[in-house]
Amino acid sequence: MNIDPSTTKYLIQARMEAEGIVEKPDVVGAVFGQTEGLLGEELDLRDLQKSGRIGRIEVDVQSKKGRSEGTILIPSSLDQVETSILAAALETIDRVGPCKASIRVDKVEDVRVTKRNKIIERARSLLSQMVEESKTSGTDLLDEVKMSVQVSEIVSFGPERLPSGPNVADSDAIIIVEGRQDVLNLLRSGIKNAIAVEGTNVPKTIQELSKERALTAFVDGDRGGDLILKELLQVAEVDFIARAPRGKEVEELTQKQIMKCLRNKIPADQYVEMYGLSGERYKPESEFPEPKPTGGAPGRSEGRPEPRPVEPRPIEARPMEAPAFREERASAPLSPTTKALNPKLEKYRDMLVQLGGSSTARLLDDSDIVLSEIPVRELVETLKTKKNTRAVVFDGIITQRILDIAAEMNMHSVVGTKMGTITKQPTGVEVWTRSDLAP
Figure 1: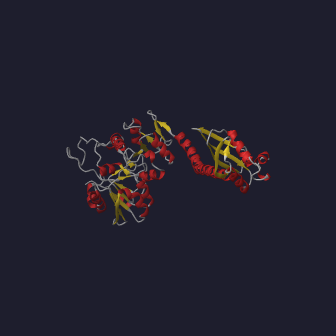
Figure 2: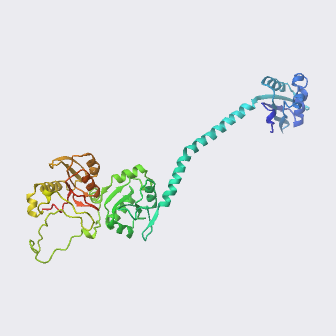
Figure 3: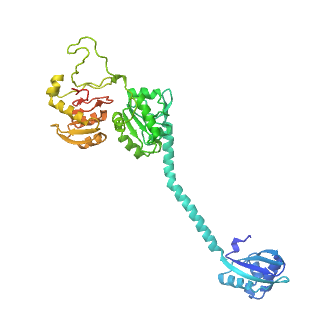
């Protein structure tokens, strides 16, 4: 039905039933003919329609089994009272054409209310859409720009063209991850020194990098991560190990989770001991034992090597500054006899033996009295708060970070099981390992 919106305020909806077959002109004629003169001149339908106060009368009639039924719609721009009177007058019609008929008004609809409800519903829908878009548009824009920059920053490294961050070529420390998506996720967190192995077969590039850089393996918390880690430990010199939470992958971690995992990284040797990983570990050439001398060197007998003197040793095959020791400690070389006479070193050696395999550290004051005993994984953070620590003995690898903190705190001794990757040893800090203190 087409209704002129300019003339419609109300819509009279009525239902017609006739005992015979009638058509639309019969219904319209009955409406005009049987209401004429009934409501007076002011409500005469013909005059109202001419003046535009009543719209076109729409009729829909259907005939079935000798009876006719249909609907009558009359748009009105009269007021409520006049429209109601006109609607009631329709029910006085008792004949349509030659047939007996009855008309019943179903309702008088306020078209403006209906339109208003539709407007409200549509406006609510549009507003919800606008609010949702405004919430995400700013974030999406930032993420889109950030993502485009991060994707542009990813590069290919080495002959295998491994996905990596832009700082891998120049960084002293690199992070090994599984795939390209892991590198991208670390880039989103601002970490640009990650490189992917792209599978369990560790590329030659990674093996070569591990000989020169401090290498942290950052693997997924699933079985795939276990397999890659075992492969890495066998073919590359891994210094530290970080794991995603159990059941999660590196590529799906948030920035906060990534930073937490990397802060909680564990030296590789400690990780192997803690989790009982089987398989032979990779050893760099500098860590293989030197051949025993065949000649008769002074102080040695063939077939039974004597213990070598304990001396403050530089880190072999790694550039570093020579340590400057305090005068009283450097006054005499540490021969085997000196070991037996030096109670301080004997105390350190005994502590290291006691801590063997426990992944525990002891913090000592200036008199070598134990201040506290903590897990090695908490050593770095604890040292920052224990300002009165002057020495530390721990069952773990001595790292550059631990030595830097020791220098800042004016500590005199750091004792561990072995040396990690050290690029610069601070002056004024004595460094001892298990082999240095061996009897």
